[in-house]
Structures are given as C-alpha cells and as structure tokens.
Image 1 (cartoon, rainbow, N blue to C red):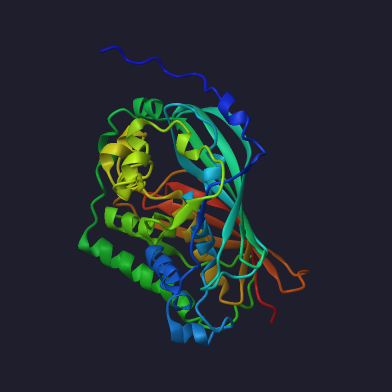
Image 2: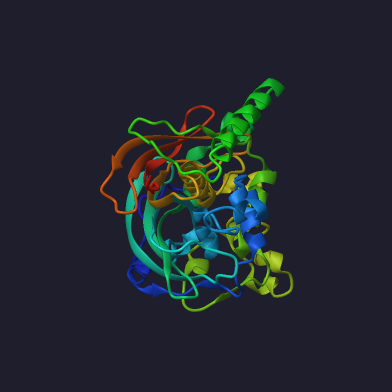
Length: 389
C-alpha cells in the first residue's frame, strides 16, 4: 500500500471570512442550579467546601454556595473553544493550546443565567513536528449574566491540524500506548500528597491570605492517576453534555469545521438517540475515553481535556488566595494533555507583588503543570488580587 504524501500546506480560505465576525452558537435554556456547581467541584476533584457544603458556605463572605471562578468555562458550549474553530479545513481535528482569562465581574451564583458572546480573534499557521502544517487560532468568549454584567472574558487557543498527518508522524506509539504502573506504595504517597494539599486551603478556612511575599511557593497539588472514569466524570460535569440543555442562537461553523468522519457528530441520528451527537459517545471527544479513536488523531491513549487543565489551574490559584481573593488574569499555554495512568502536578511561585491596588495587593504567580516524569503540560503567569489586611 502506497503511503500518503506528507501534507505541506493548509488551505485557510474558509477561515478568513470568519475572523472578527460576531458568532452565534450554543446557549443554555435554564438558570444555573446549585447542583451544577456541586457537580463541577466534584468533577474537577476540588474538595473546597465553599462550592458544595451549605453550612461552610453560609459562614463565608458570600453567605451561600457560589461557583468557583473555574466554573465560568462551564457556562458556555464547547469549553470556550468554539469561536476558535471556524471555517472548514477538511480532515482536521483540534487540541487546546491555551487559555487567557480576564475576570472583572461578579461571582456566579445559583439562579444566574449566563450567555456567551463569541468572536474568532485571529490565527497563524506554522509547521510543527507533531502534525506538519498546524493552525493556532484564538477565539474570544465573553460571559454575561442576566443583569447584563460581564463576568469575564476567555481567549482560547485551538490547535487545528490534519489528524492523518499527526497519526502518521506518531507511528505505532510504542510504549506510550500503555498506562504507567503504580505500586501500592506509590499510590499511598500520592494520596498523602493530595491530603496535604487539601489541608492547605481547609486550614485557611474563612481567613484572609495575608503576609504574602515574593518567593513564596504554593503547595503542590497532585491530581490522578487519571483514568477513563475520571475523564468521564469531568466530561459529565460540563452542563452542556446534558441532553436538551442547550439551543443555538445564530451562525457558527464549528460543527462543519472539517472533522474526520470518526470524530463527526450524527445530527440526524441524534433526533432519535441524542448520544449520536453527544460528543463523548460519538463525536470529537470520543478519543478522550476510547484509545482506538485517540490514536486516529495522534494521541497514544485516552487523554484529558484542555478546558479541565485550565479549570485545575484556576482552582489552584483561587484555593490558595482564599475566599476573599480573586484571580484577575491568567495566561496559560498548554503543551500536552494528561493521559490515562498519569499523575498531574501543579506548582506555583509568587514572582511579584504590586501594592498599588486600591482593593489590596496583586500577586503575580508563575504556574507550572507537569506529569510524573516532569514533562511540562502547561505553564504561564497569573495575577491574583489578595485581600487588604
């Protein structure tokens, strides 16, 4: 059998007409329910009682359960990536390349209804070792509540590439096809590290995060080992995955972006069985939990979600800052996903403090996300508003 010629170019003519054009897309029918927030905390493996325990939240500065800032990405369709996936490029798939967040509005509470305004911001095509010609496109999602208040804005980077080319370059994946093996002793150590991390914010409780200085190191947060079960739990914590939860309010080409057949949704079949357009069972997310489809798009085995990586980072920063702290800005680049069997580690360090803010000092935190082999999965900087003394 003749091997296909490597691709050297990418036709972006269908993308150009979408740049800078306001987009429609999915919106939610219903208000946010308190259990949506609880389900999110559970799916993101974030046992901060502020987000699920009535009694604890009632004694907080909020007086009730509120959503973590990471929940914002759960208030749109497609993890905020859809505005960055516009225009048909046949035979492509996508991975998350990063998220930049600006938060300048109120916290999300039960009973709120959030809508999204969207825009394809820009794109660039580069040749990569991973997949040859590859598009890095950025799209903006603005989150607005029922009062017209802007909660925040997300600029998501989508990596669009030819799935066949990525699979060809990857070859048979070798040992990467198999999950790493953890001994009982290893697992006990990981669980102990998790408990140590959880105590770091549980011990803070309702107190303020004070006396922060440059050079302070945030506690290490381990997550994992990841499994198909944990990835599925994450997916099902996204409200958009619930049948009938959304509707479309305008024009978007995300569903016709050129997905390979194995990753396409069956819109007609979904009229009878919604799982045909579910995304996880059939559609572009099935590679996350089914190795057969992961390998079709250049991944050695089942892998996690870019949006979840972003949520882990926001939760990490917010848990450290305490309930009176706020993540103002976060700019993170993703360089590789979590895979089944891997453990993810989050570490941070305070690199600067601005004392000129009227509401309190603003700490710059350098964040680094790695796996058990110290392979970098994500990194970037964030500005966190800390409470005044």
